[in-house]
Image (cartoon, rainbow, N blue to C red; front, side, top):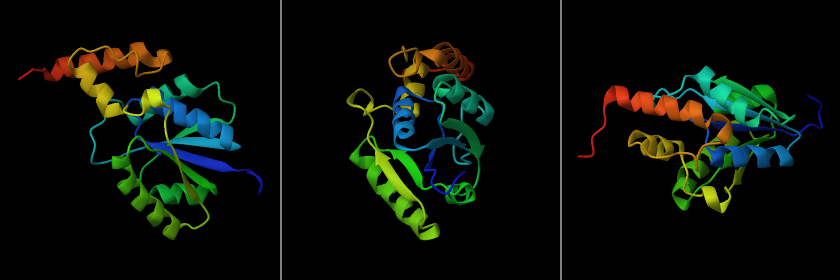
Length: 173
């Protein structure tokens, strides 16, 4: 990385990547010289897809971006940002309800590593309400997630989610 390169980190669990995530990643790619999409391991969550599978899904969706790469990590995000000398952390904000938590994280990260800014992007209006958990919930009850998941991975995501929820059983009670 040169001293002048503007590297941004786009962190998330991406379980699975949605059209909203894709929108934020692609827009970050127009703002920064290089973007690393970082798939996090969160011990408080039980993901449907493994870390490596999520990395692969992101590559399938955004692999045409020449300035984007995908990585995975566990631990403090700011340690990853520092190690890569990134100038920004790009986060998507869907609603005001996201802001309190993300604002606290941004202030904490700034205190721990003052050389990186947190940049908040709002998704386009078609994806304002969209989250991975919403996609999982729709799939759980047999709904069509085609409007929410990028076409490149729709079959993979649909098959996995339906198999996952068929294995545990679903009820409408």
